Length: 562
Picture (cartoon, rainbow, N blue to C red):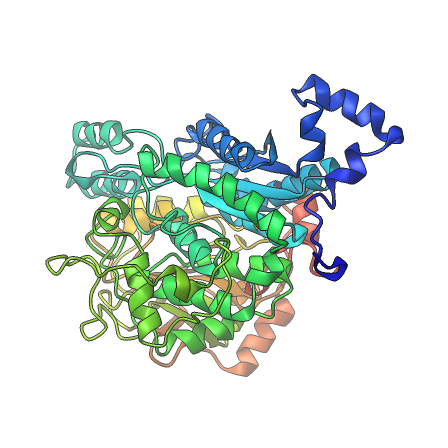
């Protein structure tokens, strides 16, 4: 092979283990199982997000072992290491939720730190919950070493197709008097039957689909149940694929181009995915050094329809989509219609189009994925709104079922907890626009999700008559007339800070506007009178995050000015 074409499969590990001077390193590695032969193999880090903190990740230790076996079988030397995870579903509606988005940065930083320190030549990262999944990909993008992402898989639904969102909405049902405490207990006890991520097209399944569309996962990795033979095989093949990428010198920068991100956005829209995908894809693009903005979501959203009749706004769960073939038949439809870039490289070493060549159609009888000629919504459900309340943008999730415009009077709250109390005790009535402020990346700090309030709104039967806007964000399970990621956030003097009780607010998804019915003169006067609130925390992780974090419109990343 000519020298110019030589690909070193060990560009990082040889610095750690080769030569007389690295004998101490080798001594340490012998203690964890390395043999003489292993020192000449490319090292593949297996980043595991296993923990017993959440059912989303409780099985990932076994998946990591399978990925390691796949890497070893392909001629690499695997090294498993762990990072943290936190549970949105458990911390939701509590002060602990402030750590959720923060954990994305902690996880990405930790994977970068271990991989960089230990000299891994390649990486398999396995994620199974909302924040550890984009975190894994952010680290992959930063490190730019051959890598494959593996999704831990979706949970199986509980009886009567229950899931975690069923429990949140049942809380509202108890408050409304439509459910008894006994019925709530029964729903609570059966909604989560075992391992895996939340069952609808919520954030985990949305991000799994987006990452596959980016080209960083093997085919249909996003559409497998956590406790399936398919997921086990996916892990083995991912380990092998990582070694293949190392040997071929294919890096994330060869995969993560602007067109790949457009593919991811298109798939998210077609599936009716979570608003969190906007935040996370912006963050991943930042780490990949790809120019991506809110306007790209608007541009693509104008001509990409919603085709997936999936929860929370639709009827079906991820397990139902798996049964009919996952997301690949959908991707092939989108490709054939010119809505995907087929030439993008993937972790298979081949292009999107090549990967879809042998993919068949969905069964004729299925009703989960609509045809392009009969969409659920002809344009995106993710509306990027601008206006005097959101000069830098906001993200709305408008399925169309709740209407396309909403005008109502503001009911202002300075925390999620206060808003939830008002919803549950009947203070909130039809025609209200709930404003929850000081919940942004800096103000929260941490940009909490508002599933408790949105679930309570639906549970009380107010989903069609009450809107909610916030500088926080929403769970993928949230639905109704909801607008989040309002920027600039209130804590830095964004217009949301000056909204007063009874002000008229209009949300218009057709005009893509979010406006306060108040003259510019009055808005200016209120901003002059506004006094910034004192920081909620002054030391520790949350305080550091608040000092470093960027606007949600830029992905809420923490190194944007470094």
